[in-house]
Amino acid sequence: MKEILYQMFDHRNLTRAQAREVLLNISDGKYNDCQLSAFMTVFLMRSITTEELSGFRDALLERRVAVDLDASQAIDIVGTGGDGKNTFNISTATCFVVAGAGYRVIKHGNYGASSVSGASNVLEAHGVRFTDDIDRLRRSFDRSGVCYLHAPFFSPALKSVGGVRRALGVRTFFNMLGPLVNPVMPRHQLLGVYNLKLLRLYHYICQQNGIDCTIVHSLDGYDEVSLTSDVKVASPQGESVYTPGELGFSMHDPSELWGGETVEQAARIFDAVLEGTASPGQSDCVQANAAFAIRTLDPALSWEEARAKARESLESGRAAECFRCFVELNR
Image (cartoon, rainbow, N blue to C red; front, side, top):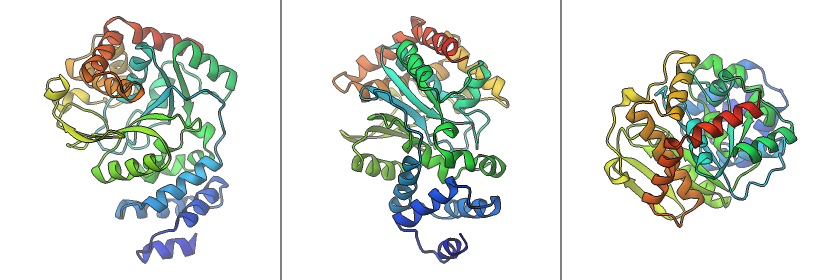
């Protein structure tokens, strides 16, 4: 690690092979916390390259615990995190809206490292017990429409650095990696990123790896469709910028997306969204993200049709029913 750190301190990038080797060593627990902290901090001071991100991804997928599920018609819905906005669990709520609309979701998530409540936090608060048992995962997938993969169970490197990430309390390059290393490798993805550089980087990597991915970035810094500003969208069909009005929604105040000071507060907001008692900004934000996910899976739909499916999933109670079924199957 010493030689790698000196190379990086000298402003020289890692090759794809070097990046892969470092992540394999992290998976094997070969570095101490101080070395890990120094290594992660470098990427806060300069941008990660395509070669580096690809090498890190290679290593994590190489060492992943593979999960045998039919992911051909499923989607992962995830944000990089690290936007500093401390929103409620928008992407997690979106998963159940998409499932309530009749589609299937394989979500790869973790505890929050730079925010109060990550996907694993809010699910655990509802009594969900994480598992790597394939029969339980398949049952959840088939019956509720959602399968949740708690990242440390499937990516040893993510488990190895969990303590250091929480101690640092800031985004690291692992925020960038999480969305790229779902162990099932579903062919479809809705991915939120916290800046435009990452949008272009992910767009390139997804194209290179045959992932049908819609990447979103709200121009005021959110790693999802926030409806607090215009949103940049990159997909296999091209790149566009949309105003909330063009998507059929009102502009909302950022305060409506606040996730609270505790996991319990974030969980209450999450419940309110699925139960139909949330504020318009909270509900609209989840509906907008769900509509983009639905169109990723079913591009023949018009935007208006996808948005209507998302709204119907919430208003009919089917999203809430999918979540109740998911919790019952994963206790």
